[in-house]
Length: 445
Image (cartoon, rainbow, N blue to C red; front, side):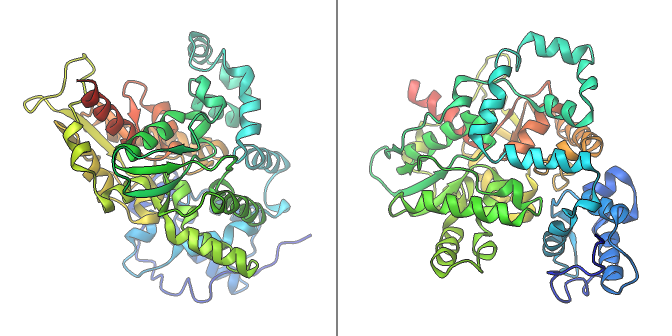
């Protein structure tokens, strides 16, 4: 079987606005890591034009330059000509899954990841034997002795991201309905996420607490699965539609909702694309998908939009420094906020998380120099391109470390795992966790 020269599904004329000016290069994570023109947005666009003109064949070598793309969308924000590279890479990725474009080992590894990560039950079953290892001195010893290298680069990268596993990692403990505190202002559904509910369940608990404390009833549909973000970003179209359809069914059974909220930006980006992803489905499903997409918000976006209640803000108390002393006006707690790519570039959300963090008394926000550059997580990028992800993770860690922050803040599970891998000396927390801690301190006094 040979790969077709053309790329069916490529948006007509989408490559035309590119004038190869190079404004995208400083923002492109793969270009920063590899220094190769072919691993930059304009290099890939040039390749797409050549393929469409019949001057270049999409073979394994060319496909490798597309595989190096993180899909971070920073180039979309940087482009002065309005090139929709996001549409180009989304249309290209399904073609990259052709079996002749990757080695059998690469194909097997990717099939394993997309067959495991979007399914919490499978992921939990795999992790059960590791409960006595993850986050223990044994894990530290194994890493310190370099024994993970014998696993090979992909498995070693996965082990390096493995966090401590709590009891909550293995079951969904949130009630199906969390009542609003005081007068109910809104009723929302909460997406738990597939990876987040396993690797960082405290984020969902904190999110529900903050929402309820702001007069928002939270509905957690039982049996909800993955939104399809992992597969969506890998061009697995049929699997993405299947996951999306199942999730729509879960939320349709939740009754009237003012919004569907998510606390992981990769998930939010995909939820908001449901109307387009399922546009050619049966009319009823297509309409339900479009409605959910229109109703989907990142939790920070939603809270900034509807506002924190006066009672909640009055209850917020200073967080503590690493030495245990409370933050104060003359000694604020310094936070560095990391912009997740699918939040900043994919959804255009920047001010909302900063606005919410500044509601906490005596915090000081510091901005990293390369706030719009990807950390190297990018869905499963750090598992399929571990060498490039390692360079980008170290670069991002140095940037955040250089702010002098005491806590790094991330609103995406993939970014959080990547940052914890490279920022061992700094805690990495979600904005909802910090708000919940500040609120809890206030309620305790």
